[in-house]
Length: 177
Image (cartoon, rainbow, N blue to C red):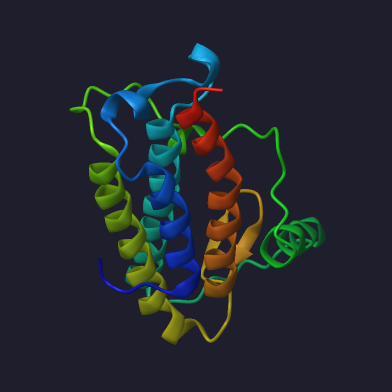
């Protein structure tokens, strides 16, 4: 895989380690056989969808070729501090519909195939962030639905904290517990 920003490489490594060598059957198991909880594959699909969403948002911002004009509210600044600086990710929130995993009719994937697929999405996001970083001068580049406008550094940190939050779900799903 191509080199990515160190924070994003931490994400890739932390997710790839438990997936390496897993079978497609292992990846499709629900924790405690509860289909209301996400399988390992669904966790990765959700994370990949968030990375693709960020990539698409950055690409749209690059096409507009103008800075983001919105500024965070006080509440958003507090959430940004908690998530992006302190590494806190709140539990109990439902993922936005656009990034929720659905039932897939795709062919079953092994852990190694899933690693390749999500690594591609992560690298694409990194490339988009690099492209906009030189133009942004540390200003917000894209608005998160909850955290508000974030700069490139904050986006990378958000994705690391978000992935760490889901890494425990991934491990639980692979254990089946």
